[in-house]
Amino acid sequence: MQKEEQKPVDEIVISDTCCLISFEKINKLDILDSLYKNIYITPEVLGEYEKGGSKKPSFIKIKEVKNRDKIEDLRKIGLHEGEASSIALYNECENPLLLTDDGDAREYADKNNLKFLTTLDILVEARELGYIKTDEELHKYLDGLLATKRWMPVNIINEIKEEYKTDSLLEKDTIFTKGQLDKKAEELKTREAAIKLAEDKLKEDREHFVTKQTEILNIIKPREEKVVKRETDLNGNIKKK
Image (cartoon, rainbow, N blue to C red; front, top):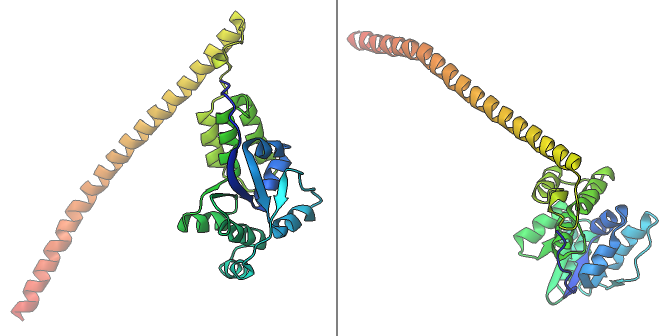
């Protein structure tokens, strides 16, 4: 269902290289322009981005980090130059938001209470605000990210797809034929049957495990009792001597 578009927020948004590349790969850099008024990158991020032949979009501004020592400090703990400079710039801005997919940068941001979003977070936000019009469109961009072979958390992508299900029956202005509705009903029936089969198999496996566990315990218990008795007898004999 299409949601009402809202105007971009005023906060200072600082992007690292990986987010820019991700949106460029799916040809949707304009989503960033739609969502955020003030997007900045550092010269270090610009260098990394243009190294692959990409060209900086006109709506993205360049901002230098004043505290160069902060970049070096962040580099020493393992952050790459682009991420280190982005976080250093974040610390120099008022009401900033960091865009990053980098694992080390996200871990640092979590530990230090920095506000950040990933590419997947941004796509979901764009869907919620109506800049991505349908669930189908969102799915297309998620599949596009997977097709780029860049590292993306497949489990999170699948969770997003599950939450934003492609279900055209929810589109108010669509008229369906009886054949389309019958096909949809058959698909749902097949999915329900698959879920029921999986649930039955899980129940069967659980019962089998409990049975096996009981059998093993029944075998072990008499043997354990014998061992305890032999230990007791042995200790008694030793004391007598």
